[in-house]
Image 1 (cartoon, rainbow, N blue to C red):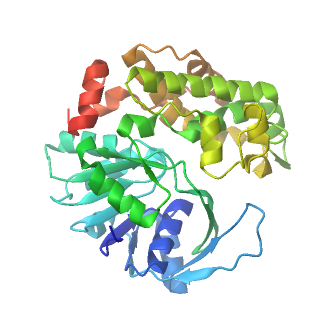
Image 2 (cartoon, rainbow, N blue to C red):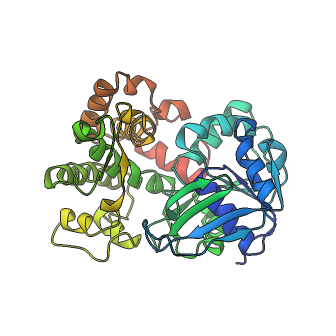
Length: 379
């Protein structure tokens, strides 16, 4: 399948800018949209005549040349931009899923394909919003488990840099029978993306939830220093911290198994599969230390726990995973302990604040009901 021509990208963070730029460089007249409060990012793109994109070879790469990627149009009205578009790609943080889903629910039209790329769960939010609005348009929804890039960061107004992954990004369809349609579009843009069985597989392959939270919470003394930087997976990636990462991954694997998902690939193999580590080491600690992750410099400060590695990944990933574990009868003591620790350290009740299956109307459905929801795309 060739890349569709009629594409709207919603989101002006690092991921959204990189996607829009990649599509522009591929000759597609992409429309870049976001909510009015992010209008400054759109104004910068308009002023520059496009997006300045640098595909780096490493996090410390300063030699790779940038290219100005054309953008057909920008819009501060996502609903108007998305209405009638053949393909809509949404790339926003997890806390933006529900607000956008509710905003767009009245505007989807039959035949559209909507890809939620980045943090998983957007397709569930979209269906929940449609159910609440009393609408059921014939649209194809897609969810990825992660961005197809690493280190997609805005470096200035209208400027972004990223590293293309070599794999590890999966795409699922909702309903699952639309996978050919959804995966065909995704792989036409990012050939290294692979197919997932269903949206539960992508939801339970959230690498951010697995490696961000333990590294942050188990290195509080370092990251809350008043100044300086700290390598979360370098100096902070000790054998003990890695043991917690591995135990956390084991709980996600157990939930995948309980839901009958065939893919039981562990986090360690995905470090290699994404191109972040050259090969598997003797254990996860050795593999992680050989990866790109230890080179990441985290900026320290007394408000370090306000960072999205905790404030997003705990309530929108771990709390949701804990809710799912309770629903399907899988114990999640490591996940639950990290939620408690993050709440106490941050002075917030993440268990109460966070997303659960109840918000999507999926609590009480059991394993059979959850699998049916993924297959049918409705519940």
